[in-house]
Image (tube, rainbow, N blue to C red):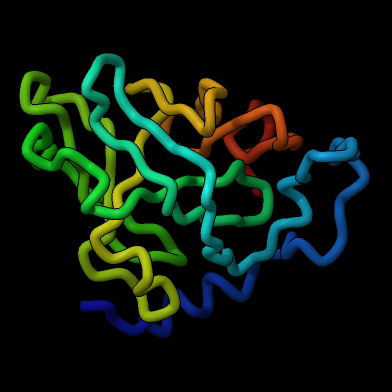
Length: 183
């Protein structure tokens, strides 16, 4: 079940200056076949992605899909969300903690059953209305578990907290890099 955005959060959202309408001067110019994260909108959007996305270090992989959803937000590498039917949920256990995304809502964390203290994934059990399509979908931290888009190994977004998926098609600079705390 999704929920509405509280007024205090709607007010905070309105203060963003980078909204994807104009690429800042410091942004890297994308080459043909690339996307600039500075062209992504804020508020973010969700788009379907039909490439093969796999998660896991061994066979069988933890997740494998061709029906991922990508969240695109100004200044951040895309985050891929995988449908619940394409994730081996029996290998996951709830991990401690939660966080609040100003756009999607409250996230809960998941860990591998054999490493319960190390969150590798998150989901939004009751996202804000605008992101209800993400209900039940999981995203994974490429810094903590191997993630692939088609056959390209995903690189993690810097900053420790963020879960963006960096691939060769994406140019930044990205939120989370040094000196980006104000983004």
